[in-house]
Image (cartoon, rainbow over all chains, first blue to last red):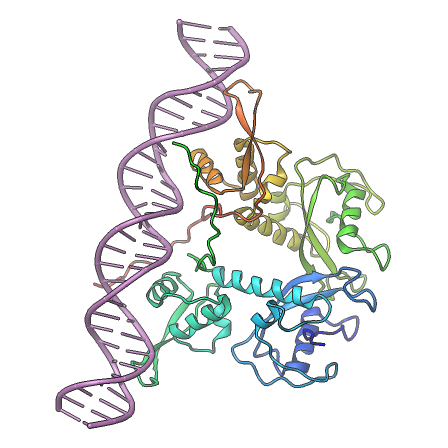
Length: 206
Length: 206
DNA sequence: ACCCTTCTTGTGTAACTGACAATAATGAAG
DNA sequence: CTTCATTATTGTCAGTTACACAAGAAGGGT
């Protein structure tokens, strides 16, 4: 059955973050120098693993590139699965891993609004269009290009021009940017309210 | 030396949340029916406790009343310390507990913006003025009363009128409210930007 | 009747958001 | 060289929201 990559501490002295990097590298070839790991939450429910008490520290991994996964020591096979496939239940995960994935995606979506996390999905230098694609991919929505340009440039310290242009793929060359110094975005990039739940607004008197 | 309340799991089957409630009750008389506990983060650095490897799951406790603390089994004494005293370093805490407290306060401040958490600091019924005091206390700022009234009432499902009024303390009686069904606030109550860092905006050409 | 205290409400202006289309800069084709 | 196709970039306008700001309402006490 499919499961998120993970494992146990090697020894009493291993740091949790190091262990997460090690387990991730074993099964996905994402080494610690090309991936950003961030602590999500602890899942320690006594009944979550039938084999015994397991307390897991879930981490969220952010990387600009996804190398082909390799079956590591724990697993017979490894593959990248689109988040939507997991969240919708089309792909079943072991234990409470679907719940963890759901929390992780929601965390990433929120974090994109208020932090410069999105730049971690891009390479060293990137265009605004590429950055927009990150937001559209994570949020699962389409964004207006003009408003996106205005907003990302209004958030001081978010992106800084790299000076150079990128060879065009048949159109006008795009300006290249780098990640700025600020990690918290102000003003934030609020994602569009998905369905805009319709409240009962009728029956208003006067 | 002062330290945050905490301890270890009693046995392999004890839930983490239950253990946190138990440890809190032992030292503060805050029983699980009058306090809200929320998972913060995991602190597992190998060197954080010189006695050996300790992985702590930090929790944030929210309560409307603070009963007089009692020295429990672990501690020789217990006391409530204002957050500012801890954050400013006027009161030294053991291990990395000051760091944990700092993260916890920041978490609470952010959470007040986007969730109905503030009502958990109030009693069953409360006035809008009391709710405003919660925000001012946690955020450490003063808020405009008129705008606060408008905002909390604009967030549908945040507070619902209780119908009754509260005997005045010498002024006009205040309307009483209860916590509404919604846990996420929309629109959120953004806290005022503390210093409003002055960016270098001079030197603009043209 | 008056004052004091506390709670409650409205208005105008500035800023922002979101919907919308036109122009600029390149490479490729004729 | 002209034209076209493609991608990148910029501006406007209307609706909404945000904040600063002051006056009135409802009690209790003198």
